[in-house]
Image (cartoon, rainbow, N blue to C red; front, top):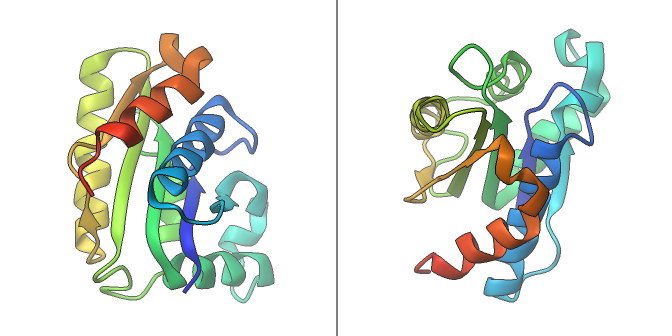
Length: 160
């Protein structure tokens, strides 16, 4: 098993959403005494995400499939998670996340958007069989400059 895997669903690798996701993964790893998480930047997969047999995409799917715990993050696009995240997760077989813990992390401009997108991401992860941690982490864009503090507070509040 890979341990903790962070999946950043932002189309742009290295985004503020990605930084938040990595901070959440690191804070959870610290809480659990686990190694630093492996990071999958969906945006860095590029057009290969849509190409059958793409090696980088296949490797990303394998890492996600082998994880014990996933931190899945996305900015809110049109009231939901990003299309690139959905394309990646669609490549997982049915129930690929069965028995795995998943933490949904969503960023948005306003709280209602964040909450709505978090609920949709939660549904997608449940559909794949994940045990989704409650609460997830909806974060407003105005709070992203404090990603490390937000992540540490969130991880400390989780009841493992």
